[in-house]
Length: 311
Image (cartoon, rainbow, N blue to C red):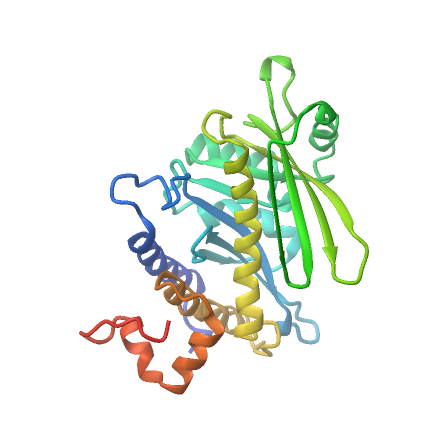
């Protein structure tokens, strides 16, 4: 049955349902392009491998998803069979969505000129792209900016997961008339310097460069830091829940092309429905529903007596 269902149609239906839930739960009444925090709405694009789906000559299936920042909800998903071809699915993943004014964040794999130009010129969105050595010219230009003479503009620190981490942010405007950066629509360059100290090991330091099409007067250093952190949060939270709570990486469903993808898709409405209801601990909530399955009915809107208990 799962193999007979159109996977793209199933993903579109699930994404539309979750988008409606997310909009109802987070949209301010008078600012449709802003999140509840007052910042522009943002979504993260990221890929994930279904590790347990590899068998014999069949490689592991891969999925490319668009996930909201803040309240983590998967809005769209497409199949991407090989990591090297994820970039070809970037535009088809986002094409059906209205992205006007939305900030789209993505990692270095998708930081190609065609994606940035398409987002800004066709979809009227804003982009925030990580630049690494796969874009050698832009990466070298960013590294050559006068970062030493720029003061730190935002800092944040925290502890968790057995480590202590601090991040400092510097930004630098990019002037097209002075040559700009070899990446389209780059208005501001950001350098995030991260210091990480896992318990019992030595401290590590790393700098990451990012560019954005947002104008400096529309997004300050704290806003840009929040967007960068939001991308990492969306990536880690979504994958962590799917792998740890729903045991996605250990799932051995592998027959055919569609069943592994279908099972992965069915995890999205489970996570998204609980997240939009405010569940902080998905594992705890899932165990409560397992013990009393009738709790799932009002969450899914099956009964006439909606109740979010169990979240």
